[in-house]
Length: 106
Picture 1: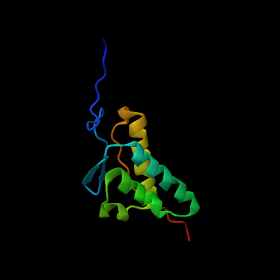
Picture 2: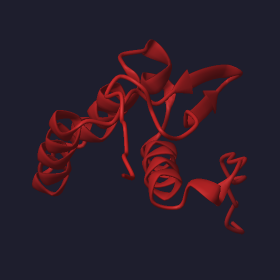
Picture 3: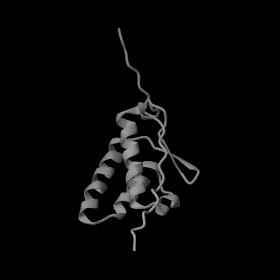
């Protein structure tokens, strides 16, 4: 008889990592409780609580001072990368840097 055996403490997929200024962060195990917290934080952002955007990183990766150095667009890119990596695990590595600010002619 076919049987699927799952150990809840082990992931079926390789870890998802994000590197910030040379420091690697591994995504924690994504649980229902974690997703509920992310959903709650997502609801806070349109209400003007932009700090909730950074809090999502703490939920996903654990607290770290490195997250406070990121701008809102970098935070969004990390969240998008994590979601894409979960939905399509074959997505692979991506390098993101802040685009050079364009100066308007005076």
